[in-house]
Amino acid sequence: MSKLCSLREAISQYVKDGELLYAAGFTHLIPFAAGHEIIRQQRRNLTLARATPDLIYEQMAAAGCASKIIFSYMGNPGVGSLRNLRALVESGRVTIEEYSHFAMITRLQAGASGLPFLPMNETGAFDLEKVNPQFRRVTDPYSGREVVVVPALNPDVAIIHAQRADINGNAHIWGILGEQKEAAFAAEHVILTAEEIVPEEVIRSDPNRTIIPDLIVDAVCHVPFCSHPSYTQGYYDRDNDFYLQWDKISETPETIQQYLDEWIFGVADRAEYWKKLGQTVHTRLAVKEKMSVPVNYGQY
Image (cartoon, rainbow, N blue to C red; front, top):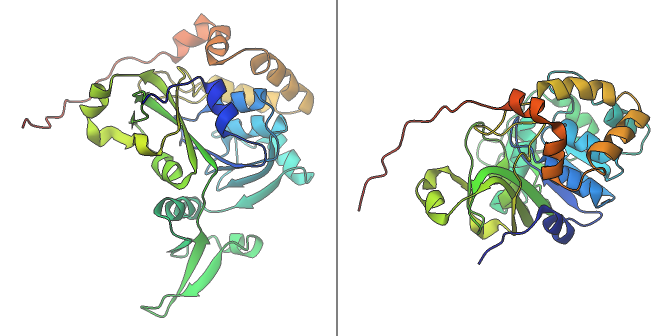
C-alpha cells in the first residue's frame, strides 16, 4: 500500500505541538524542507533532538517552534556560533540538554533496541555529568568497575531524508551515514523524504543499501532538493556560501525574521524555494557524475 503523500500532509498528520522531534542526517541529508514546513504550520513547544542542531534548528527556534534542544554539538559548522539560538538559550526562552556525540547516539541506540538505557565507557565529558543529571553511573555486574549509562531516546517523530525510496518507504542511503537508522527505529512515527521515488525493483536490486525499511515508515514524501543548504550525495553540493551568509543573517532577530518571511513563509513549498534560489545557485551546486563500481549479487 502506497504511503506517498505531500510533505505538508505528513507534517500536518504526524508532527504535533509539544512533541519530541528528531531530524536526522549528518553533514548531508539534513531535512531542511521538513523544518521549513514545520515553521509554516507554526508548530509550538517542540523538543528538538539532533546530534548537531545546525541551521535547521536555529531557524525553527527563531520561528518560535522550539522550547527545548537535546544535542551533542551546537554551531554553524565551519563558521561559528548559532547566534540566535545561543541568545534564546541565554535568555531562558529555550532550554538545553547536552551530551557528547557518543552519548547522544548511545541514547538513540537504546531507544532503537527497546532498552531503557545503555552503558558506555567514560568519554572525558566529565563536565557534562555535572550539569546533566541524565548521565548516571552504575557498577558493571561482571567486572565490578563503574560505567556511565544514559537513558533511551524515543522521539515521537523522526524525519529522515534519503536519496531514493519506493512508495512503501524502503529507502536507499549512501555517502556519509549518520544516525538515520537508529533515529528511525527509536521513533514512534517516521516521515521519510526522498530526492527520487523509484520502482520497488530498484530498491530490491541493492538490498544492502536499504538503510530504512518500509515497516517503520509512516509517510513517504517526494521532496527534491530537500537538504539545501546542506547537500545530498550525488544530487547537489553543500552551499557553503549560504552558511557564511547565515552568520550575518542571524546577527539580529529582525534579519532572521526577514529571512523567515521571504524564504519560508514567502514560498509555498520546496519546489518554489528551489526555483527562487535561481539558476546561478543551481549551477554552482550541481555535481558531476561519479558512479560506483557495480556489485554482483549473483543469480539464483
